[in-house]
Image (cartoon, rainbow over the protein chains, first blue to last red):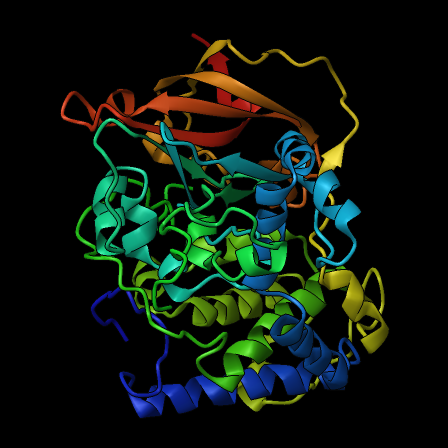
Length: 214
Length: 219
């Protein structure tokens, strides 16, 4: 049962004992059968939840918000004042829960988001969190050695740049507003959105550079 | 509770390993587990704080050795058994054997799906004026609740500054144990790296948590 903890602590089909995977699979099926037989859930409703996660949410939502903030100073200010309100007014982006907080990167300050206690993440904006965000290496080190964690992502910042780590310990959710890349003057929101990566909105990466291979 | 889930500042877990082109789910059962947790929560079997508490309460070696969704599965089973929605014998049998318990919001059906795709609302009317305001110096209290709390160990006893006031929110410490919402003021409190990690800390690092008022005292 006990196995070494790694950054990839998921039941991955090629690095996981097959018999345990089957056991988990059976257990999940058993639970779903029981919940269905007891009349608690409709299996079709579970299918619909999964389909909604797979099709409606994802970092494209956050990327649209960031691109809009880069293009429209009034929207950017509204986003920094009350992100839930500002995003809700956009309409075309996924519905958003309360207490979304957008935090702005500047040449003087870089923001980075973690949930040391579990996996809190602005999933309406970014989709479900990646495994590394939920795993022990990131959760343990992001608050103590954020510069070292950024190095794991190949990111380095000038040593005088303030690194601000936001530990998501309540129902507030944080979205990093990265800096707009240089060389994008006159770009449309749609073009800009293509540059916005998921990691740049968590604070563990930068947006793509115009013209660089993706 | 002072569990292994409270990982901030622990050493020895190694490098962060991002997975290129990571899929949303690595197996089909992960998606089923996520959907069951969302559905049963939305149907009123438990609140989000209780579901977190049951994952934290897994034995430490199980917590550390289990994948993310395996923890969700184990926590969900334990929670549903404790609340009387299922019986341990039913899991072993793979079928329902006992009468169902009624759910606060009834059976979860396709028409309820849209509702779970937006996070819940946690803001509440203030039962009392706020004790702190942005700019105030505060200290995270040196408290060690044996049940669910959202005050991480690494800030306890340390002084910081209130930066934002988020209004009053459901208090997870109460909600997790079925003791009601007990709304409390919530603040972003920011700490200097050196205050938390000592004189060798990176001088350019600041860390914030969102702290409920009962976690704080004036400093």
